[in-house]
Image (tube, rainbow, N blue to C red; front, side, top):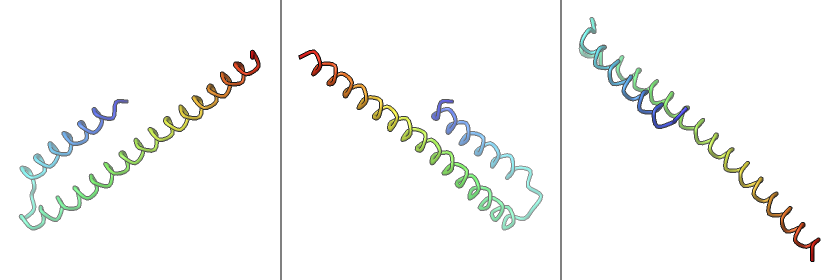
Amino acid sequence: MNTKYLLGGLLAGAAIGVAIGILIAPQSGAETRTALKKGTGKLKDDLQNKIDDAVSFVKGKLNFNHDELTKNQKEIAHSQSSKA
């Protein structure tokens, strides 16, 4: 899944949810603000977890590619030295 679209979807969904929540909220203003703070805190935590997962995934891919490149370089160097 493309991370750019995932993050965009999360942010758009959160904005729509907040707008609808404010419009139909049966609570007082203070209660609504408290609920919004809790909701945005949860959204922030969820988004941070998604970002951490994406960073871990990319780091893993980079490490794998680095290891493969190193292995291939060693194989090429070995094959070149055995030809000489």
